[in-house]
Length: 347
Ligand code: NAD
Ligand code: DAU
Image 1 (tube, rainbow, N blue to C red):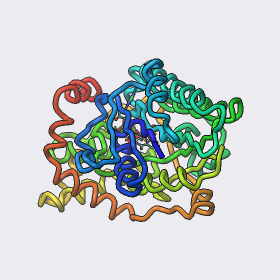
Image 2 (image 1 turned 90 degrees about the vertical axis):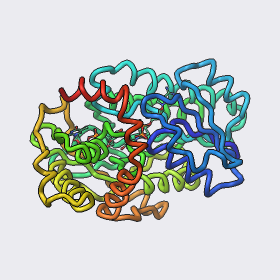
Image 3 (image 1 turned 90 degrees about the horizontal axis):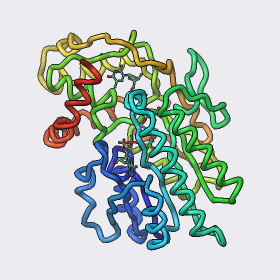
Image 4 (image 1 turned 180 degrees about the vertical axis):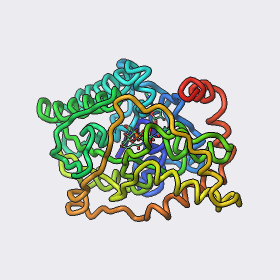
């Protein structure tokens, strides 16, 4: 079985690649990644020499390149993660999200359809999506697989659009797809533009912790390896043309999460208890900021037997330990372009 994993040099993609390369030695894994600011081959150093691993540098927006790649390698399966993934960047540059998340996805769908249209048996296109397509919850309720789409940011609108294209290809061309919509991930290799790794980095550097608005926004956090395991299960056992919601059963208001993070970091860094909390700074809110996300993961639990394997406390400890042990990784990704982004975003 030849599997194309797109975006495999990114945060979640690298955990998915590692899992597939390690657990399925008979599969040939191709990691296609454009190596944007978010892609980093350092994330895969431990598996890059495995015989069943191949890396291809390329852009999913490049129609001819994608067509040729599929003709050359005849992938039996695709696990599609490549995307522009940061909400704040989508507010300053929506077109980049249209290109990669919508046009890039349609290019992959076309290439896969054209390759197998005469016989889709045993083939599978897996589209990895997000809970943000459902919009925002109020104080109560959970997102289920049948919650109406209601995206609020250019990022979530582009992911919603790509989800609709995948479903439409299933209906129109009979393309065999599965999809999942997951809540907020955290863990090793998380790019420090997102809340948890950005705040870990700032605490290490004694820099302000920019909490948007009143800090009462709520997210449902899942350890990235649990997401990778869910992707494995959906890819192998999920029903054709079905969507699965994946979540951590783990809701936190941002401000409570930030205070917990500060306390663990103080302990790990041997600082006076409470000192990192003094770095908390309330800043201007994100425009269109979704109040609350929370996933009902009952379907994947009942149908496939998936549930998170680590508690939030265990996952956070592992994550912080990883960042503290990988100072070089952190320094590399926070130099250069990152500093420009940071100054523009937070000054
Ligand atoms: P990421 O930004 O860390 O990684 C994205 C990867 O895609 C990078 O390696 C980048 O180089 C690559 N890429 C970007 N544009 C490309 C292009 N045009 N062609 C080829 N490669 C390109 O993202 P992530 O957080 O790992 O998210 C991966 C996927 O999971 C995305 O589809 C995202 O929408 C989805 N998702 C993320 C989360 C989360 O909490 N991070 C939650 C649910 C779903
Ligand atoms: O829900 C899944 C989504 O989770 C994924 O699809 C996205 O790719 C991923 O980026 C994430 O989106 P969020 O916008 O929820 O994640 P982020 O880490 O950017 O922000 C989490 C919360 O923290 C959110 O309420 C905004 C807030 N925040 C974020 C940053 C970067 C701050 O208060 N300050 C910050 O500096």
